[in-house]
Length: 523
Image (tube, rainbow, N blue to C red; front, top):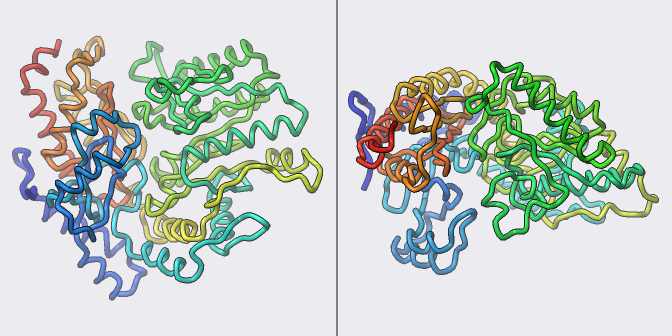
């Protein structure tokens, strides 16, 4: 079944018209430097839709002629999905995606969906960027693989490392490439441990992060992630991993932003004093907490935390896996406050999801500490087969070109007011307690009582109700378990896309509100 008409009353655009508007407004301007033949080929490409909030990255090839029911059965039998209940997935099965273009996805039933979450916070360019596909194809033909071991290298990886140094905070001069965000965090932890051992501070083994923080799901990094599902039955967190309260304005009892910032700095100082400054290796934080509920701290918070870390002799690590590459406006969120981290992790928007890649960047001080901490012939024993993969690097270089020369960063900044205004307009809805955003990263927090900010009872499973309604109305975003709705639209979104997104969002919230169990839960 294909969704043609917007279900919201008064919304005139149907999905096809919105897609056409998207193409007219985005494809030519942002790919203006391409030859006409390339733009023509892009305009003839098929359209695509998104899936369940927990299955955004389950995209399959359109080449398969299998019946959807057969594919679903094979999925249930063999494919383990990330961060999912195995038994629940066996019962529910997958939503199988087959194609994507711009901000739109299409599933195996030809249902079209507007993706307001950029896959999994990553497809910042939108789907179907032909120049990215061409960059990958040309690199595969020229040199599909080059190891970084034994002092080998490839041109795309070298150029990408230099490009990242050029666009990142000035403190960061060295790059190690990973396959994604989780292993970028894991690499950062290993390098930090090596650094402190190398400079004669071996007692510095403790790490601090934020409550509700997310730093991936690697064996060690998942302990810095302060979300219960990533700890259950994994024997985490480790005794060396600690948390301080999140700067959460909506849930804070403090009077203003300055007080929230001061409280965070005080909490960090107290935790370091409790553990001993000679014991604490690093503090990890996200500029905006993504998977913890899109918690947007007050402006100035990140800079204050960096200054505190400098004074406490604690390495300051910024996790820009979600916030990087234009997601909050600038290329990296920490550039907004002239923050100079000791290390920074990134992934997702680095390749816009077109190929796996992440990175950890480090300052010259950290690099020199590691480099000079052992005899010349002693290797630093960290590496991966696919580190600095030339195809992923070629993809990343083209994606970065689209952000800058292609106008995507500019378009994202231009669309930010439309996004923020659309979220704020929903504050009048009976279900919505808070609307927050920075750049094109935002959230609505649903509450049972606006006055007390009381949450809905977990037994109501409101997030499941929201997801089901969202899919019905042709919209994809993330419905967190504590009834926070997360949004991360691609930087190619147009005003027409946002109008369609918010019309559908209001319609689905209205539909959920009319369910008797939800009405009864309101206070």
